[in-house]
Image (cartoon, rainbow, N blue to C red; front, top):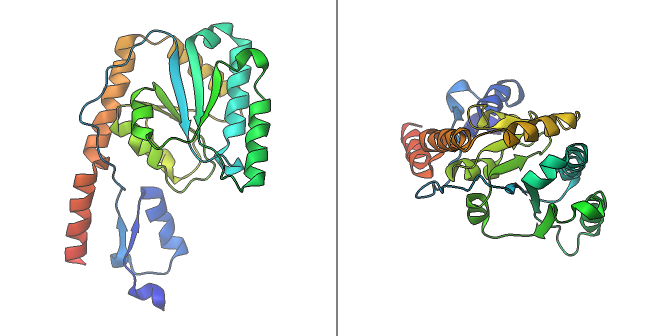
Length: 237
């Protein structure tokens, strides 16, 4: 009964579609609306000289699949030494000090990195400046399993930073092949293939990815636009 009184907003097309089966509210009370983020004033031109910086901006917990990502990158670096020279992976985030399981999980991840790769796979910890990190990075990894949404994806696009994501979760529709790439952590070789593809890119090809990423952010994820759209929806509902 209470559901009948709610107006509900769903932030992806998939969640909006799934709600028809899972939440008993009238169709007129369902609304699809992407979340928004502030846009950077301009897209930073990034050097295409080695090393290229890959980042993950996420909580350190098993559901985020950081361990699987690091293992896949380690395999890629060991299988293809050229990738070691070309890339640096930075895993941002850390567990709370009182989270002993989280601390153990972080240690487990760090222990998967061989000594000779500890300058290529880094764990800088928490950052309160994600936009600055993204502006200085070439790609964002987003590897959460069954994530409901992905704000760091939107923040990356807002800075013109291409994205590399898994295909699980409703957030997957936020990524597109004209500016991003997809990986399958059940098949670690897919990570190596994507890194090899990026390694072979020209600077012009990368700049096209940047432009496409920023264009989508401007079209669909600009917080000023999404706020206006939300206000209009409130007025009419």
